[in-house]
Each structure stands twice: as C-alpha cells, then as structure tokens.
Amino acid sequence: MSKRIRVGVLISGRGSNLEALADYKRKADPYYEIVLVASNVPEARGLVLARRFGLPVWSHSHKGMERAAFDRLIDAELRRHDVEVIALAGYMRLLSPEFIRGWQDRILNIHPSLLPAYKGLDTHRRALLAGEEYGGCSVHLVTDELDSGPVLAQSRVRVEPRDDPETLAARVLQAEHELYPRALDEFCWNLIVERERRAGAIDAGF
Ligand code: GRF
Image 1 (cartoon, protein in one colour):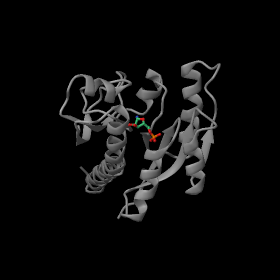
Image 2 (cartoon, rainbow, N blue to C red):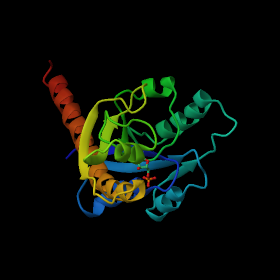
Image 3 (cartoon, helix red, strand yellow):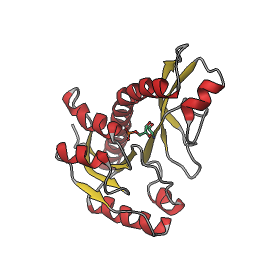
Image 4 (tube, rainbow, N blue to C red):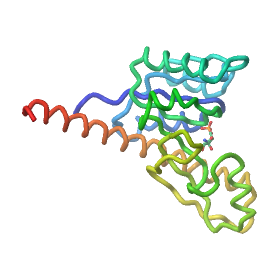
C-alpha cells in the first residue's frame, strides 16, 4: 500500500473528535496519519489529549491578530509538517478565503446536523424546536461559505421524546466519533487511489 496521507487536525476545545480520529488506529489500519494537531486556543483540552497520543502539537492564540495573518501562521506550520489534508475538529474560527483557496478540496469538517439543515451554531436546540424526527452529523468539504461544502458522509440520530439539546448533542457526538474517522479514512483512500492512477498514467506515458 502507498504511504498514508498526512493529516493536520485543527481544534479549539474539548477534542473528542480528535481523540476518535487518533484512536481509530486501534480499530483499523487507516489510510491517514495525524502529523500535527494545531489550535488557536493554547489551553484547549484537546491539546492535552493530543500529547497523550504522542502527536506533535502547535498552538498560538489568535487574539489581537487579523484573521488572514493568523491563518498564514497555521498554514506555514501545516506545510512545515508536510500536511496533505486538514481535518477541522471543533475548530471554532472561520478560515480566511486565502487559506481555504490554498487548501481547496483538502479541508474536511464535521458538523452536528444533517446538512444542509441547521448550519452554524446551536444546531440541536433548533432541530428540537422545529420538531425534527432526526438529528445527526455531517462530514463535509470546507468552502468559502459556512457549512456549505459538498457533504461526504452523514449519520442520522433519532430524536427521543424526552430529548433536550444536551441529551441529543451527547448521542450525536457518539455518532460523530463513529463517522468522522471512517469518512476521513475513505477520503484519504480515494486520494491515494487517484494519485496512483495518475502516477500509473504518467508511467505509461499518457
Ligand atoms: C462537535 O460537535 C463538532 O461537530 C463541532 O464542534 C464540536 C467539537 O467537539 N464542529 P470536540 O471538540 O470534537 O469534542
């Protein structure tokens, strides 16, 4: 098998999805390896988890910095680690258009709703207020427009009669932990296949 795709994970907080991505190695032989965990919040709990997994960590507060300037810092760090794919995992900052352009079709995000429904924040409360039968989560590509890029994978979670936003969020989070590693793995597998196909075509002189 070709070498694994080098993934950089961006986080801002708790890091439970990062943990699921890192832990996936115990269940499968993934086509990705996490080579950097970066955060705009130096005290993020997720960084503690990352260190526990022995992953390289970088953090820098975005406070007082312009968005584009801060994103250039992250960009440099990701490139220094030869990152090929970025996985946003609770990264609570909008990325600048320049950054997104530089990583086009290479940034994944997990969002706690069945996109295109309930983009943005506070998804579970809004889903409950609307009387939805299902909540869920989506893995999607990141584009300039918030939570609007092509959806790669989704998982549905049934709303229970006594759910409040917290109980629904907790069950959706479990579903996120199942979905994200599999979706990232499949994305990376496809990249490898595509790369080998191109290399084959070049070798064959096409
Ligand atoms: C998750 O609900 C994810 O869907 C959203 O932010 C939350 C991050 O949680 N994008 P964690 O930091 O991975 O625990």
